[in-house]
Image (cartoon, rainbow, N blue to C red):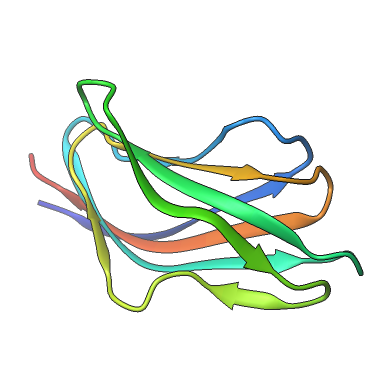
Length: 109
């Protein structure tokens, strides 16, 4: 069993639902941090969800505000992703938000 420290990054250039991280089918992940930075002067909102292996969608943050030129820490406690679960993010405005998740991936083989 291997422990792998990683980060996942995305520049939300569209308002489409965007995959930030997918847990491998043989691993679980502990998400320690999700940072969102608005690099515009306008401010924006972000929605974050988890999609499970059965394609059920669970909302973590729904239209969470991020002020212009500010960074928000979305998590106050670690978040666990099971095998094949997908962490997705959606911006209300294109080309304003950057998202970085810091995580520990635990291989179960």
